Length: 481
Image 1 (cartoon, rainbow, N blue to C red):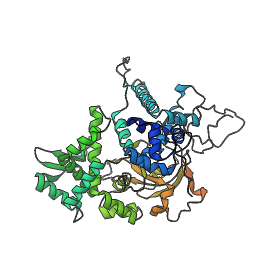
Image 2: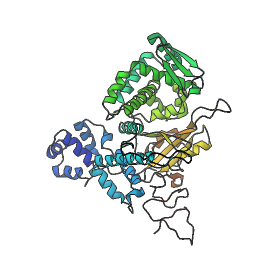
Image 3: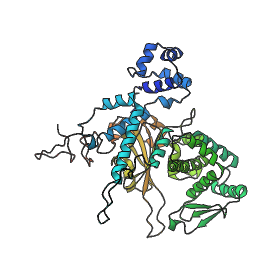
Image 4: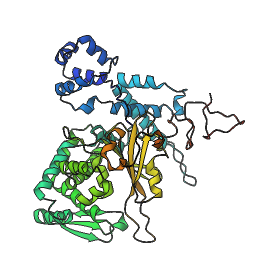
């Protein structure tokens, strides 16, 4: 089943680029070979952007095709829909077409509105009542509460804006792979030898790291990298690659961060941690080698694991970063959660957007994965905007090392548009044209518009609840007509 191509309205983005280079509408129309009146209609979203003009616009403004896609607009619309369900707005609901019009006309203003709402939520959490039995808090001063987004959210927004691809870091790691010839033997042994020969740094196992909540630690004075004994081999290799990035490529990370909009020291520090992790993944899974191999094995994650000697999660995460201009892989979204539904990682190179202000949908196969540990769960799903996805989910993480050990239970999900499903081994045996195979998933119960969902846990905010006691519906909360 293939979804018909949707019309893409890009007026505000074209106008933003044109104004940025002080180009008149007439001048741009002339370069595009169309009339000024036609371009005016495109810029005011009266007409969608025709595909033949996309390449010309990319060349004129030196941007990628994804800049003019509606992916970011879709995420923004979803965020606004979720926010506007909050009872603080005291509204009976704002029509979707009104939200779409606002997003297209003033995307920067809408983005600031989302940031303002995040700051509001932080302030609410900061002043919330303590747990039962705790001491009563002192009255909060106005300047005590946070008035900005959390640093990790700012970094996540930055990574998402980059579509989880950092070109200079990626190419640096790829060159290092070829220089070190990591494919000629065990990557772990190669890294151990390289760190010792080029930097005089030894690698040892520290039995006490796990008790201190650490997986690895670098002692620069002792010129030693200590690794936890509970680490599986692929994780130890990854941390050694991360340490190498910290030692040799801080300048690359610093340049990348300077180009971001991150200004706070904590956010910039977290960004450096992220880029170090990104480098490690790109070193062990060099871009072109990994992209070509993934295509050859039809993105079979288990085969990619064995071929490159990495973990299931590392292979999934790398697939979500394959957005090098001119050499793109399939655009995937990637998400990691714990068993309670807390989102630990979330990146998307396609239209998919997860709930930002509520819990994820329980129908998602990432939660079913917890009932079948280490087994891949495959699912066809449809989001409330009509988009269809093929999702692959599985639990990840280490197993217990003793009866008293309590490792964190986590799972990952990797998803792509159903239009790309034929390129994945996981579509084998699935009838992509059978609507009964498609599971409807939503953005979380508060904002989900599917009224008759058996799994609804909360009423749809912004609508009156049917309190008629003469009958019982499928869902515990029905919307009054």
